[in-house]
Image (tube, rainbow, N blue to C red; front, side, top):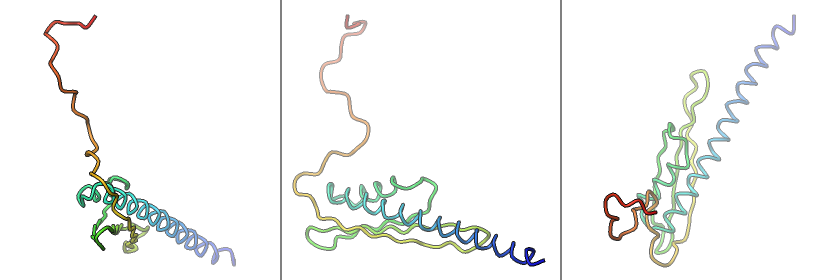
Length: 130
């Protein structure tokens, strides 16, 4: 008979542990995204690129808020707030992570993305290049 009373408690403890593991995983994701955003902000100096880098480090379906703040003449701070969805109607929890980086000297790198074809004269039509 005592087993009947213990089984619901074991199920509740197991669900709580699964929820805590999810919060811990999302905290690690938020910290990694903040670091990526701070790194991009330090290299490029463009807050929009820093926000895009932080968002790219997270799964696409997650609700995230990224803030980039200049905290000094050569320092930038990126804050990431990520909502964690829990099981069985528990209200979502927000995890926060902050990363700070020093700006890199020199010109910013070119934007990432598809590269343009090399400039030069186009080959004549019908040329096979053999």
